[in-house]
Length: 184
Image 1 (cartoon, rainbow, N blue to C red):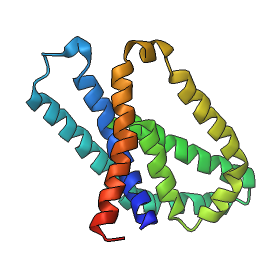
Image 2: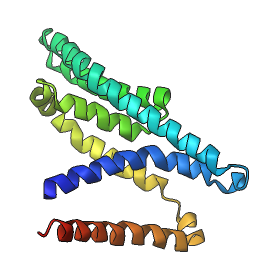
Image 3: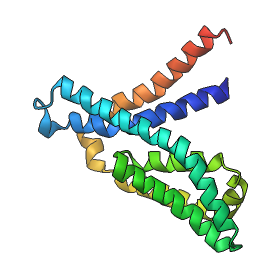
Image 4: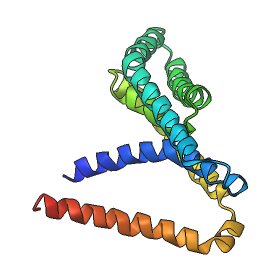
């Protein structure tokens, strides 16, 4: 059940990664009153449609093309070339997803990793990029930290507390309801 719940949370996060930028732009204080509910719904539908198209493309084309490319690169016999191919593929998919499908880089990187994890090259790819994971982890947390603007915390404490309550209490409440409903 715990694994199922974690998978559900991951899928929910993917949906949130698609919807948050759309909702944020629709509720931007500069555009309040100019965006109708219908326009917002169409924008959200278009964003979800693009994300579904990207996911389908990655599952159908990516799951075939990526292993084929990595097998060809592995055949060259160069460990460095293989590592570079894995990284370039992941970064390329993330960038192309953001540019072509208007989704976040994080969603593109997530899909690249998901497709790569299902290929037969996953063990070699994981072993080759393992030393780089610490570097990318540090870069991730530093870049997220650099996004923090203390002025926002001071100017919007109520909104931050509401979001925090939704995440902490809402997640706990949802887990409790599921546990009770499944009689566990």
